[in-house]
Image 1 (tube, rainbow, N blue to C red):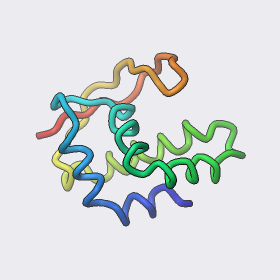
Image 2: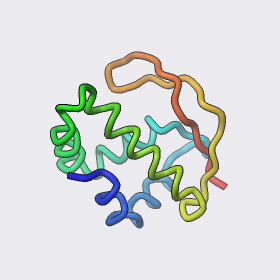
Image 3: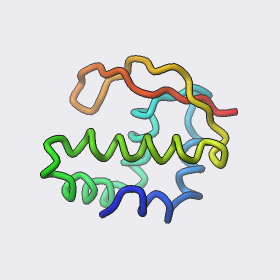
Image 4: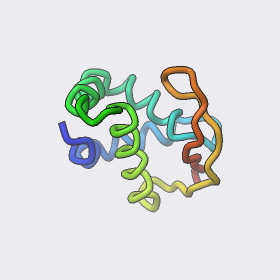
Length: 101
């Protein structure tokens, strides 16, 4: 399943996830956690489809962050400086942070 194509087809739901995040500043990981809950089956399929990339999580999560970045105006978000966030395996990565406007 192509990540960007899926996201484009679910733009209203993506907006709903962003608007439901609290606090006003959130990390890509915060978004992905809510996204994975809303679209559990599809998220698992995305990871499975990218299993041969060497790091399916990084590939899928990077595509999601890219989509957010490319659609900041329609989601009413801006980039904050990158910062630390715990990822799905419990390690800390430096990732993109966002702020709703």
